[in-house]
Image (cartoon, rainbow, N blue to C red; front, top):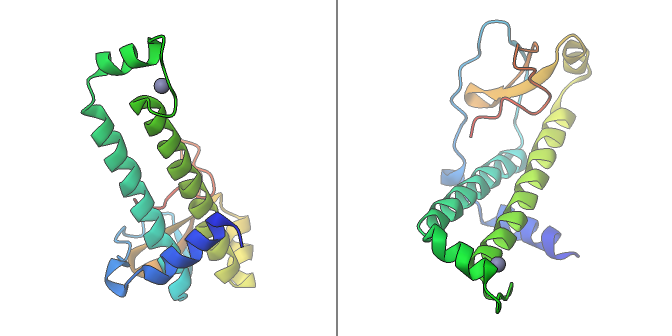
Length: 156
Ligand SMILES: [Zn+2]
């Protein structure tokens, strides 16, 4: 088993029912209800994705407390060492967290896709994207002027 697959299995196992928050975005005009997420595992993936987003935000916030000038000085100094440089360490941490976020995004929407019925998949054909709304409802919606693509619509 790989490091990341172990991490995923362990983290999903640790998510409590109380950490699973129901999405509370109402269905908007033009959106078509095509299903509902029943699987607790898929809901846990959603919760884990939210936790990682929070970690990313916290890390960025803590980084903004660094003195920008000190960071630049450290990066340009002759004895710059990426192993101990605060900025380099932060960049590496962010990169790993972003990889987890991307993986969880892809995993979540793939899981949602496979929860859908044949009838729902036919309805999606006529639309451009899917989203999650109140009480784990899955909706199909039409492309907006912003050019929404599959995967957009997940409230964070
Ligand atoms: Zn550095």
